[in-house]
Image 1 (cartoon, rainbow, N blue to C red):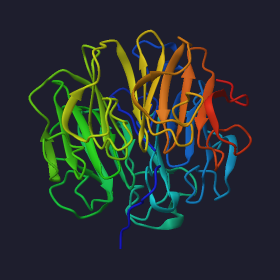
Image 2 (image 1 turned 60 degrees about the vertical axis):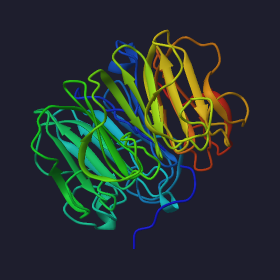
Image 3 (image 1 turned 90 degrees about the vertical axis):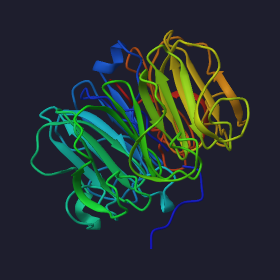
Length: 395
């Protein structure tokens, strides 16, 4: 029997058709120097990153081999995965998962798709549910035209270079968008459309964008996270409103963030901790504008917290702060976007269950929040309530 978690856990941001880091992944302002150098992603108590040389690094929780290191030993500092140096994109899954299980996806520069970690629902896409299948990165099929990846809690998503969308893994709430609730153990095409440009996976739902800037949603909807003005799940992609200006999407436990091409920020879904940034804790059933600013550049959602960057390189946070995951020096919930420090050189952000990661323009890595499994990469397991430089990291 499938079970769902009851505690706060992370992650995923938007994914673009370019071969770049995913949602549970780093989200970077357009044109940021770091976009071409390093990428970050966060899952349920673990972190994943790419260095400028294309090497892959992981740390944190490892109970289902989500670090890809061939074992289930926790790491509290970034550890290299294998010796390959051709990695191009990453994604971490398992937000709000039961028992902190997780899985990871990655792409190589040759367009091949790789997976490792938990496989209980076939989310590795290897054609089975073998638990030991994903101790190390394992190639998914033989295709070499994959363009982007994203992870939900127990499901996986990917785009091909031809604009087609593929899904596999858990489908209990129809989060695969295939018109039913049957799990898939291998990548399965979602419909016949070939104009998808971005995809993001939440706990039990999915969001995606098309080339015309339209927003689509499907899967679980108990908090209105599909943005369709109700709380009824959908088994296939359903258009959200009539707007065509959507540019980026991010999914959390049950909340959603999106950017429009005009730089405005929108939010909907679960708002129990103020994670929508609207000054209250009332759930929203359709996209609602966050403030009046029109200079937002990047977004990321965690279990119950949100992070964002503005075009000037400033970092903002709001929502749950039980473990200092907002990086504001305390553990107080915020219901509106609140600036994190005074630095103006942030280049990318990612949210884990209850921790945050960010890159600066110089490629340095910073982390904060819950650290019980070493997910901050600081060589210890103490919380940090403000961005703290990961000294062992060199881009």
